Amino acid sequence: KSFNASLLAEPWDVRTGSGGPYKVFTPFWRSLSARAPFPSPLPAPKKLRGAARIGSDDLAAWSLPPTKPDWAGGLRAAWKPGETEAARRLSHFLDTCAARYAQARDLPGLEATSRLSPHLHFGEISPRQIWVAADARAHAVPRAASGIASFLREVAWREFSHHLIYHWPGMVERAWKPEFDDFPWTDDVASLAAWRRVG
Image 1: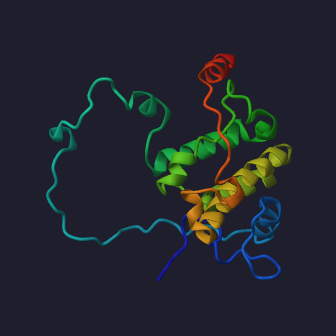
Image 2: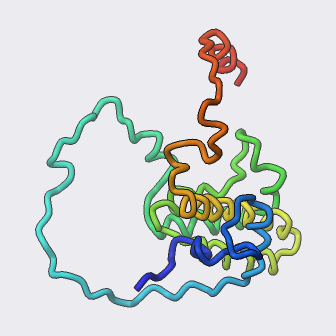
């Protein structure tokens, strides 16, 4: 049996009026958001019965390269894995950034985004958990509703990408529209260097 946990709706469940998949985000968003409110996630089980404990190596004993430079240093500073941290980040975002998300999300110098992407990717938090918590906050704090609506629309972009890749799996390796297969690229080292300096 399949139990959806990583999306708000399975890619095959969100269909156009004619029964096909969506190709454009805005109508997809209207269809998806019309399904709200999404059911609240079930509580975590009190106990999981699994296989008997099996022996394992200590990862540090493997001396996996590289050790210098510390390639994970920046990642370690920016992301702490786990469900507890995912829940803390969501709560922090809703408390501090959500109300101004629509205006501040595109300003890289501000801490204005949720930073939940890695937690979503690794299943440490679900989009349903995010949606239910954000929607509850929008109702409890009306001045934050606009920013939260903008944030939930971004969560839906993630859904849309899953929708597209499910229906057009080849798009991960080649252009979705064949007319872009032969798109003319310019190899201009000087222009690339100038573009890098602008930022």
